[in-house]
Every structure is written in structure tokens, then in C-alpha cells.
Length: 170
Image 1 (cartoon, helix red, strand yellow):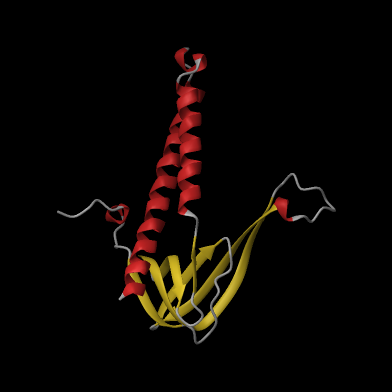
Image 2 (cartoon, rainbow, N blue to C red):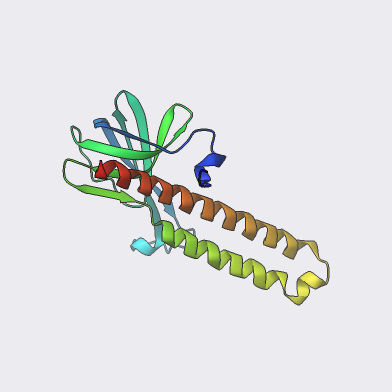
């Protein structure tokens, strides 16, 4: 009997790919809070995503992390993730050349999902929902969809980490 895995909901399973990094291209995607004062450039007003595109075994690899990937051209890396279109989306990686690796914090996603679930539960038990208005019910539905997505994403990341750990042991 196989265990239920979140990747069963994807069209392609979570897999790992290893190889030598080539054609590395790093970029930053930056979102600015609209409430940012004009002359204040502190980091609390920005949300940065570090995007790395490179090739492994002639396959295009894309990663989007909140921290930059610690890789260079010529490094031997193992990435775990899934295929989306003609690209491979990285959920976790391990750089064998300098013994580093990273992934997004799946436990923080679980915690945030539980927070959203708590808000939805509190809203569901409030008097305003009992009155039958539609807006609170829409908020409850939105919070529950967000909760489900965050838990799904966290479990995908955990599955990718487990796959990388198995690859590093072998």
C-alpha cells in the first residue's frame, strides 16, 4: 500500500534531477508595499523573490526562493521539484560542490495555514454569519481555499526535502 502524497494531485510526480549547472541566470522579482513612504527604503516595505534559471542535463530549471540559491556555473547540484510546461520548478535543492542546500520553510506555511483556518473558524462562528449575509461566507470560502493551498504547497516542499535526503544518503 502506498502512502498518500500531495504530488498525486499534480499531473507529474515530484522527482529529483542531478547534474552540472550551466547557463546560470539570477534575477530578483521585487514587490513594493503601496504604503511605502517616498523616501524610506527600508527592507520592510519590499518582498523579494530570487529567481534562478539554469540548465541541468539540457533541461531548463527555474527556482523562486525568498533567499538566493547558493550555486554557480559548474556546480554539481541535485534539485527536487516538478515539471510545469517545459520547465522544471524547484522546491528544494542540494549543492554537492559546496555542501549547501535550501528550500522554502514548509513549517512556516503550515503555521500560516493554521492561522488562516483559525480566522475562518472564528468568522464562521460569529454572529454576522448567522444573519445570512453573503460577504462573510465569501471570506470564509477564500480563507479555506488559501488554507488548503498553503498546506498543499507545504506538503509538496516536505516531499521534495524527503526525496533530496534519500538522494544524499545513496
